[in-house]
Amino acid sequence: MTELDIIASEAKHYIGVTWSKSKQMWYAHLNGKYLGCSRTQEGARALRNDAYDRMDGTLPPLKVVKHKLTELDKAAARTKRCKGVTWDKRGQKWVVYLGSKYIGFSTDKREAKQLRKEAELKRRVDYLRRFKNGKA
Image (cartoon, rainbow, N blue to C red):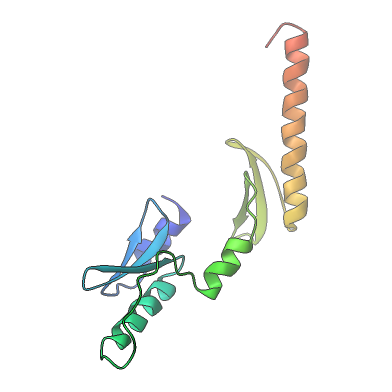
């Protein structure tokens, strides 16, 4: 179970807002119509509430938007991810893994990425040495 799945299971339940485990996104629906998705539950709830407010007839009909992202979602999307580098919320540090092997940690994301790259390079060099000696 991922961290997002845990957050989703502990989240408040709103009518018309559902969690997609496979897409890791919150979806907004109103009267069976898809309204959009968001990385946060509050973003999906806002989409649904906006659509509900338009139902009184004073606003033009709502256009169904495939992926309407909130500002918070856009900011999260701009954050580049690095394979093997994750944020430890409890320890307030970046943790580095190579596969399932723990490599180390750092308080700086750039330093953590560098640790990951160095570990990958070391793994390749070790493999080539073993291959050269006929032990691969």
